[in-house]
Image 1 (cartoon, helix red, strand yellow):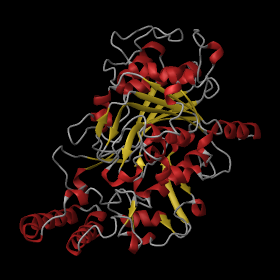
Image 2 (cartoon, rainbow, N blue to C red):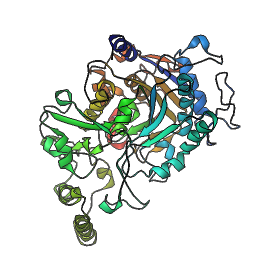
Image 3 (tube, rainbow, N blue to C red):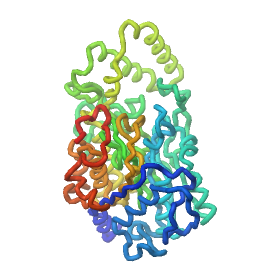
Image 4 (cartoon, rainbow, N blue to C red):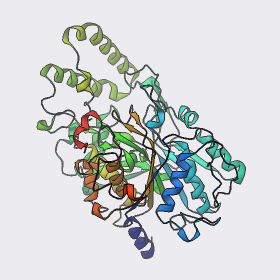
Length: 503
């Protein structure tokens, strides 16, 4: 990049404006999610007979941010004109995680709704003027059935609309290299026979070594780290000494602009999801991501709080983890069978005598509590990569791409988030240039204290950080004091392991 480009990108992230728009707390369910009003700049013609609150709220946020205000209300209004240029590659990064709600709740308390994506796509296309690429890409959790996800979201209806009307292709990519088949009642383990290979990112992956810039650099006890899958040796291989490697999507890294579209949702390992934690979805190998460290804090771990488990319960947990290390990490059908047989023996003969661990305690397992010292470091590393790593994996001191944020809070997720949350009918869309600033504002909106959430607090102190008092909030007087009076607005229930972050 030339000097002028570097300066423009630095200035871009210095814009701490965040817009909030409040609307009805339901989604338009009529594909392909047309707006319910004929806005001057809207050129597709078709209007939805039912109300589309998300579309209106996204548009309102772009207007509140003062984007291309001299043309607002005209056919020529182009809100992304200073961010997106014709010929750019623009990647929309939604929060797709799962294809169903395993507690039979509302799937859209977990994932980004397509009506939000539709509104963004329309304004991106205006800026591209038909030249460039629009890609929707994410790497959901391993047990997300992507075909089921596409059916639930009806995303292909938007793709088909643009192909029919403009002859313009919108790509929808599953960035994973495998998925895990899981039945609704199947809560056991990720067996080899249920793993199915996927094409993954068609452009491949980029390896980024943060080395001494990683938040894990210099930590002891890295031999006890745990990733997203059973193979701890793989996770340790990517995180030891001055090696701290992440394998990320080249499609994401090639983008000129990434539009992050996360869910307004609480999270069991870092407190809130939003933009920062949502970056987990740019990784094509999630076993490079350290989720927690085995053991309790006095032993250098963060798997469980201290003094929570009895000796009997500790033995149960250690035995289960050791069996996973020995048997499941190899992804061998024979070892899978041995593990399954061992589990059946435990259920029939040992559990009735030895007992179990209560759900109130198990919900904190795997670092699902506010003492998790691993996951926030991973989140900080990912933000560093997203902003400062180029498409070859080389780190720079200047930003390498723009990230714009639009948060879907029409229906948010609370309590047991991020995977089985309850609905919070918030009716909110928030947007901004600096994804960390947006996360600070959204956390306060949820009635949670960002100063008690290390994944946010650490980012504010990093090379991309700022004084949160300098954030400017648009959207009316109701929200002007969000940061000064947190807790006054949306009353989100934190995850049970994160009750301390409630204002």
